Structure formats: structure tokens, C-alpha cells
Image (cartoon, rainbow, N blue to C red; front, side, top):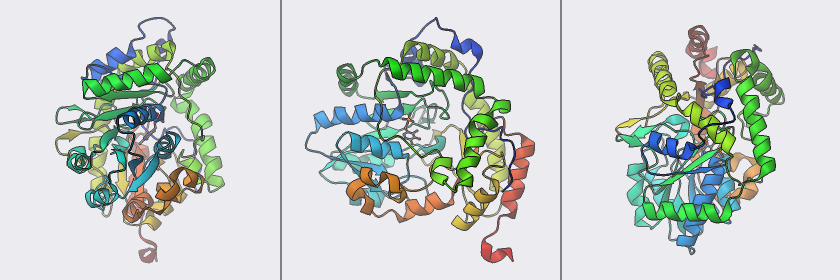
Length: 412
Ligand SMILES: *Cc1c(COP(=O)(O)O)cnc(C)c1O
């Protein structure tokens, strides 16, 4: 494996400026973000996962007889953990063979009168085709929660993602774009459902000084260290350690604490987020321009498939460029050789949910839901950072490596 100093983060996170960190000023990130997204109101939470739990608890009160939540088999393990922590049973939906979306037929097979909610997911900034799933979910009386954790700023049919389903969550975690180190956003299209979410928030979410202090220090650390010269210490070195142990779960950042904290998002971190929000539109515009050029170069490579938005009339965001390689062997060979080469390679997630030994207790009977297409996706996907710090020269090295990637059978 090539060991280089890593100066490219795995995603195009929005860098902070020292001036963002001033302790005073407007703390109404909720209002500003609602305006930015083009909605009337939203709730700020301490994480996307906490936002999801709040949504689930609210829906549980509206439909107490329903106890299952359908999630894509290839998604963030925190999603399944949130479902289980609410006392609900996760059910896994397989993916479509040709798009990174839940498969319609697989969805029909897993939906039932027990289904409380379905969670279509906008992965890596790519816009899922929520509209095509809606009639299926509605036919069985299930709510639709759009997981837009990785898609704050993505649009479909002229509006923000998250407004086709009933409820949407966004993440403000490190690496997802705009960040308060950890943070989440919750909204509902229907005012009555929004009021129910707000009531649930008021009744259950409190400030927690210890968590706020910890997250504030982490946000300061991020502001200080998220720059090319320091990234190797905070990201590269731990990545090399995980890879040296062969621990791809940790290398992909899929190792989560089992207890999910829930508390409010403090005023200082909201101020920081509000100041950074002023740069988010430009940040995503520049990322899109870079992605457009690079996607064209990647598409010219034989065998490399570049993922596009699955929804019609969509304009996703580009924190990463997602690729599907012809075989798992080629994908793995490339990662073995170059995960630590500083080209911004990563995995959205290291595997499908039932393949993580550590999350088996969370899944329960969902361990046996059939997920062959999702597993195939998980073995052939590759994320390329769309950070501006991935220079054209480094990207050209990656293109060369991709060009030379051959299935093992053709290598000799
Ligand atoms: C990160 C992520 C979440 C959870 O968001 P946090 O803010 O990290 O709690 C949920 N779903 C997906 C797809 C994610 O990538």
C-alpha cells in the first residue's frame, strides 16, 4: 500500500473560518436554514440520528399499532440503531440493481400493516426517487421519512429534497457539508405534523451541559484542524492505523457508540453554523463545477459507472462522486492499494447492515431480510472525495489507477 501524507478529506465538508467562531451574534440558525431551504419552519437537533428518533417517536404516537420501520439495507448503521432505540423493529429493503435506491418490488415485499415508516435515503448527495416510492408506502398506510443526512442543499422539482415525503432529516455532522460538529435538522411538509414534531421536541429534548461542552470543544478542534496541512494528523494517521489492522468498518467510520445522545443544540454552535451557512450555496456551486468536470473524465473510463441522481428533475449536491466498479475484486484491489494514497477515496459504508457483526442485536429478525442487490452495491461502490483540496494532479493519479484496474482474471 502507498503511504502518503493525506491532505484531502473524504468529503467536501464546508471549512470554517476563525470569524465563524465569535461567541456573540445571531443564534437563529433554525430561521436562517428554513429560509435557505425554502420552508416555513424546522427544528434543530443534536444529530441527524436524534432527529430521526424524534420523528419516529412522534409517528409512534400517531400510529401506535405499527411497529416496523423499513430502511435501505445499505445505509448508515445509526439509522437502524435509532429505530431499535425507539423500541421499533427495523426491516431491510433491498436496493434496485441499477440505481442506489430501494427497489420497488422489494419494498412491496417488506411493507405490511405493521409498517410505521419507510426511510428512502439521498446517499452521497444523490437524489433518490422518492416520488416513485410514495404510492407504495401510502397504499399500506406507512409514513415516509426522507433521510437527507447527506443531502443538505440537494433539490428536486425546484424545491429542497425532503418535501416529497412526510418528514425529512438532515445531518450537520462533520463531513456532511455544513457542520456544528454534530447536529441535525428535522422538518415536515404538513403544518400539523410539524406541530407534532415540535411538541415532541419540547416534551423530550433538554440542554445537556456536558455534551454541549464536549461538542463545542470538538467543533473548535475541527475548525483548527480541518486544513490540508493538519489533516494527516487527525484523519490520515487514524485511517492508516485502521487499515493496518484490516479494520474497514473503522476505516469507513462505521463504528458507532451504542447509546445515542439526545439534547438540544447550543447557542454558540448555532451561531457558528449560521455564519458558515452564508457560504454554503457558493460552496456547493463550486463543488458542482468541479464534479461536472471530473464526472466527465470518470465516465470516459471503461467499466467505471458514475452515479447520477435517481430522481427526475433533480439537482443533487456533490460532497463525493460515487462510482460503481465492475467487480468487488477490482474495488477491493484499488482500496488495498490506494485508500491511504491521499486521493480522497472512501466507502459510504463498509457493508450492508446485516453483515456488521456488531449491529446484529440492533437488527433482530431483520438479519434475515434478503438483501442480495444491496450487498452487491456495497462491494462495488467507491466514493471519491469532491473536496477542492483534491488537486487536478492527484485526481489524474486516481484516473490512471482506475484505468489500470482490471479484473484479476484479465490481469495476467
Ligand atoms: C450520517 C448519517 C445519518 C446520521 O446523521 P448524524 O447526524 O451523524 O447522526 C443518517 N443517515 C445517513 C444516510 C447518514 O449518512
